[in-house]
Every structure is written in C-alpha cells, then in structure tokens.
Length: 385
Image 1 (tube, one colour):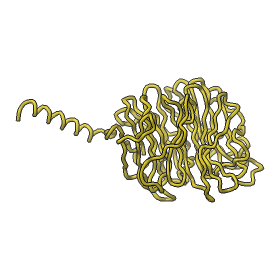
Image 2 (cartoon, one colour):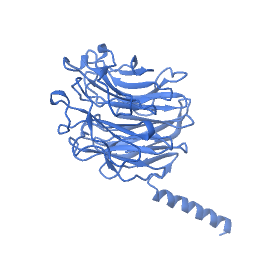
Image 3 (tube, helix red, strand yellow):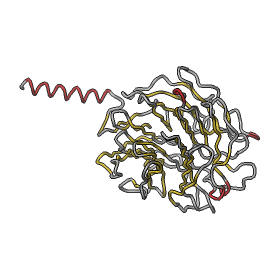
Image 4 (spheres, one colour):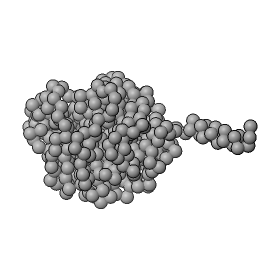
C-alpha cells in the first residue's frame, strides 16, 4: 500500500469513527439527535450564537414534567433544568405540550397547558395556561404562573413569541365564560412589554366567526421586522377545520387569512410550525394526512402550498427549519396516532421551493411524540425527537 493510499484510508476511517461517536452524526446535511432517555415532544429555539435551546416532556403522560437543556453543535445536551413544578405538564394527545421562545438578553420563555394537578389553576379551577422563564445566567426557572384571567376552556395547545425588545406574546384558544362550543371559540392573547415580568389581561385576536378547533395546537413567531404571527385551526359549522394565519405589525390589531380549507366532521388533533429565513416567514400544517408549507411573510408570497412529495395519508405534526441560504427542511411524523408511535420523515427543499435529493426517515418516534427541527450555522439541519 502506498503512503498516499494509506493516508487516505486512515483519514476515511477516522471520519467514519468520528461520526459513529457523534450523536449528531450527519447524513446529507441532516443530523438526527435523540432526546435524553424518556424525553418526548421537543420544542426548540436557536439564539444568535447558534445554540439550540430545547424544552421536552418526561414522565407520566397526563401529569408529567418539562425540562430545559441547551444543545451544542456537536449534538451534546447540557445538564437539564426543571421548568415545571412536579406533575404540572400534559403530553396526552401530543397537541398540548410546551412552546419555547427566546426573548431579551437571552431569556428563555416557556408556556404549556397545565395538567389536572397543576397549580395555580385558572378561574373557577379551570385548566391553566402556565408560563415560566429562565433569565440568562440563572440555573433555576422562576415559579410557574397562570396567564388565564377569564378566557377559560383551554384544551388544545397554545403558542408563544418573544423578541429582543422585551415583548412576549402568549396565545391560546378558548371559548370564555359564555362559550357554547367550538364554533364560538376564539384565539386569546396575553402580552408582556417587560420580558415576561408581567402580562396584560387577555384579549381576543381572532374573528368570532371562525371558531377554533378545540383539540388542535397553535404556533407563534415574531419576525425580524417585529411582525407577530399565529397559526390556528378553525371550527366553523363543526366541519370547517381550516388553517388560519393571524398577523399583526403592532401587537394590537391582527389581520386574519385563511391558508387552506379542510372539511372534516371531527377534531384532527393537529399542530403547526412557523419559521423565518432569508425570504421571510413560512408556515407549515397538516391537511387530510398531508403536510405542506407556504410563505406568509416577506417581500413576495408563494402562490400555493408546497406539499411533501411521495405517498400521503399518515403525515402529521410538521416541523420547519430554514438555513441561511434559504433551503427549507420540512419534517413530519409518519404513522403516529392516539396511543401509537411511529417514525419521523423529512424532505429538504431549495429556496425555489423544489425538493432536493436530501430526504429520509428514522424510526422510533414514541407514543405522544413528535419532532422538532432547526438550522445549524454550518447550513445543515438537526431533527430532534
């Protein structure tokens, strides 16, 4: 064997062994990272340094716990920090879990649906929308707080959005004291202007005519311009389970846009995803077993949703991530259902919206599990589950 060939073999072997030792070993620019043992339902937010901040659920599905950890670019988690008081979170149904956002000076903001045993309770002992924050440099989350003052009837999950100006917006859908069903549920929002120190009384930000799908989730985001976005599913006349976008430039007045129809006489228990990239803000959702995305903020808008290619019918819980080049990763769950796990699949699209050769699937999504995704500074993507 020549010296040049021997060197090449050694280098290749070192690269392979390095990938085997690395929990975030890359394949075609997409890395798969598994949560710490027992962890499910990850949510992730990435700071300006490229550090991923992850919140995940552990424990008994109806009365479990949330933990926070940071994740470096090598795929290594920091020591976990408890977010909740014991037994305060719920994973049952997949749609009621935590949401995370990064605010002023790196403050970590987390919201989640409270479990039946969580305290403090909402009005008249109702289910609370709980909030906690971790300020930079501290090792303990502040005590959890309930944000619902009168808009009770929480079922599906809520959303949070925060920015460096100290604004924090928490949204959930509920009927309120006079509600008679899903048809008159609305999206309610509580706002903070001091990085979560205090919140306003909630106000309705969706149109009463759309209703809101009681057992569906939401997502929220503030883009670089300061505009606020929320995604939710309607419940008009029982069967109109359509995808709606709420957008505001000032945090007070919201416009409403229907993104896609879905006529189904049942609650689909679906979730949403928002992500921002060089071309603007993109939204992803499920309709009838298929996942798709569309640009909802930016200089130009995509004319129609872009679907994940291939066989459809069992695709749920989309997760979006966009890198600095404008490439888009769409990940989703395959085959998951009530008390049933499945797999995670993904497809990378170019900034022109066309699918690339980068796609794949990985088994092992647990019961009540889903995936989260983010773009790394090297231009690749990481999927967590």
